[in-house]
Structures are given as structure tokens and as C-alpha cells.
Image 1 (cartoon, helix red, strand yellow):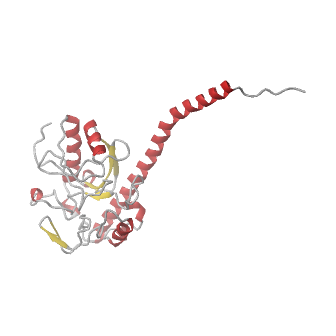
Image 2: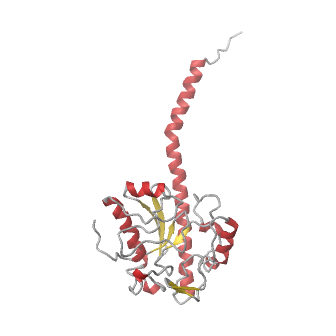
Image 3: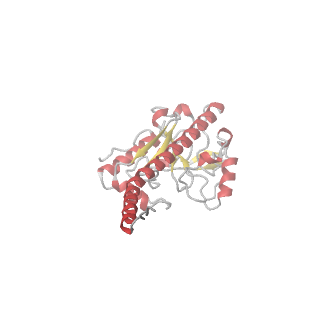
Length: 263
């Protein structure tokens, strides 16, 4: 009878070590692929929201949907929405069921009838809404932009310089009140920079296309991660790359800067 030899302990340990090395090599690539898939899904969500946003304007004499989350039929010093239902009608940051009801009651829902499109695939438990409309798109009209033509807009025809350069939606993650805010006349972030899908953020424009912006400044990425899911802190960068990130979002929001940049 031929005797079959068994694996020795050393051989088993070598095989396990080889598998561990392969896993260490492959896991980052798998994680990047997984994250790339989530990023693509997120950009598709925002594109669908932007298309629905455009359809709303098509059917309402080019008027933009009320972009101030939860402020239906309100007349504030920072914006007259007295005859406008908000795109999300009411909002509660702790109860997901209430958030879903607010989405379904909102003015945009008839054009985007899918709860899942309002939330990034990387959204946390309890978050039914992770996307915000920008301040400038018929949301919050603060004193510094009141009376400045083409900056804060209520109709699509008012958007300057063109639809392809003006932001409508941003994947904020942590939802601040009203809309996503950036200063027009100050070299400072208002809401914190969001960091989503790696080292950047996904956005959608008034013409319906979406992009992923990778932050240039390491300080932007660090600050965003350190202040994720925190209230706005009105942060000012210290490095050139950090200022470039700020200018990018300000120009995307308002169409231009309301001041002369220092960098």
C-alpha cells in the first residue's frame, strides 16, 4: 500500500502567509472599486435630482423649486417663499421615517418619485436625505447677495454665466439647515466642506450633469473629516490649495466671487 503524505505545519503556515499577503495587496484595490461604484451611484442620484429640478422649472414658467429645506410658504428676510412649497417639506435630523415623509411631501418628489435617490449610498443609518440644494438656487438670499443680479436666482433664465457652471446639488452628508451655504463676499467657508467618496465631493449642475471634485488641499480633507457630522464653523483655510477648494465651491454656487481673492 502506498502511503500518502500529509501537509506539514510549516507548509500550512506558508500557504496562510501567501494568502494573507495576497489579501493585503488586493483589499485596497477592492475597496477602491467598491467606493468607485458608490461614487458612480451617488453621481447618478444627483443627476436624477437635477433632471427633476429642471423638469419642475419646465412646468412652472422657468421658476426654480424652493431650495430651502423645510421652509414651505415662508416669507423670511433672507428669501420670499410665501407661495412656494419647499423641495423637501419639513425635516427632522433624527427620525428617518419623518425625513422620508418630508421628502414625499416636497415639491420635487412628483418629478423624482424614488426615495432612494435622495440619499447617497454611503449615507449613515437614520439619514434619508444627504443632498442639499445650494444657497444660490432659490434657497437662502442673505443680505450680502441681495440685489446682485444673477447671483441668487429664482428663475432658470437668471442663472449666469451658464447652466453648466452653476451648482444645484451637493452631497453634504450631514444636513445643515435650509441649504448648503458658502459666503459670497468673504474668503471663508460657511458650512463645513464635505468629504465624500474618498477625498472630495459629488455635485450636480443646473444643466443636469454631475461631477466628482477631488479636493486639492490636504487641509481641506483633514478639516472636513475632523468636522464631519458637525455644525458649521465658518473655517478659513491657511494654504493656497485650501483656498482653491474654497474658490471652486464659491464660484460654483454664485457664478463668481464677490471679492478679490488673495491667492
